[in-house]
Length: 425
Image 1 (spheres, helix red, strand yellow):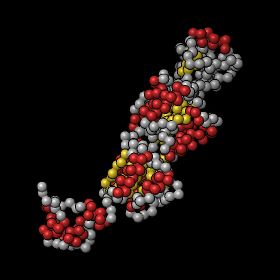
Image 2 (tube, helix red, strand yellow):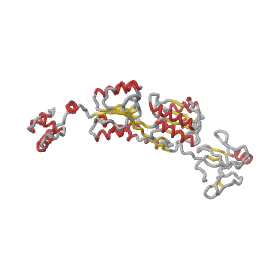
Image 3 (cartoon, one colour):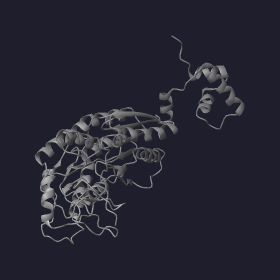
Image 4 (cartoon, one colour):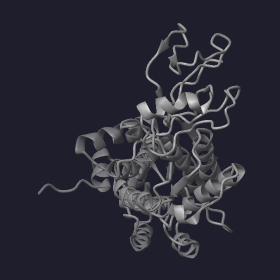
């Protein structure tokens, strides 16, 4: 076994003191350029590597950081870690990545371990500990930044997504698309962001004049398996649900699987939305409507806040609030309504008998008022009715109740209509 090269070996071969070698290693200015170059040449010749332990004793820094996530397999957290690690590497820090597997006891143990390793700083993502437990666990860490968690009555910095805003945007979107029977898979009970999402969900329902139904809100594990299990139970119990908002994209993927297993078409029978906009959201069938969260940037911002604390600088703000962005895809498409010309019910009876309607009573006007031509149906719903375009070009129906081609004015079959692109006005 080869002998470990020490700082004393370097000093002896370079004919300088231990202090001079130390000054060269640490970049101090009190060394002549000639001496510096001679010491560096000896360091390279001997292959000397400074002891991290010795350096940490001298500087009281370990150049290490702890990053704690509840589920390292969740792409949401891996993207955050990537942002943290890139900044850490540029600043000559090493990162200890710790996975708690959504287990509060394991999280507590991990925080104790990082304290014993004397990390210079800690970034804690989506902590599952109670406020009291979290305060106690963080008290001995010299610098801390929380992601998607805020701790009241403390000066601990946080970077959080505006989940309340995101939930409101998703509810407003599906309501504008004609959905009225909403449900919510709101994630794990230990997640603080769950409360923010619930607040946005309930406020948006109230603003839309819809009643909050607690029985249509279910907790679930923040995974595809958790989403599938919860969605299957919820949709089996309440088959009238026509829009399902999910805690995250993984839960939404599980909900898609449950809907398929139950014979529910997405989005025709039920709209499903996710949250986070991980790469998988655009790859599933149908692609998920979701809220985009800049996950990499969350990690970068958290790391910058942490470095400010480590370097003794007070951050400009204790909380950075990051707004999400609504991303509309096929699982819950934009509102798309078509104008229908309503005609006497006697005209429709033969057509209804020729084209049976499945899925409930067809939407028909029983009041015999042909002038009521602006009634609409949500995209994906089917009606056994004529589709007469009410526009300046075709302000009429010739009684044949066949579909009118908006470009040519020609009448074409069929009669049974599924709402698609909006009519030209």
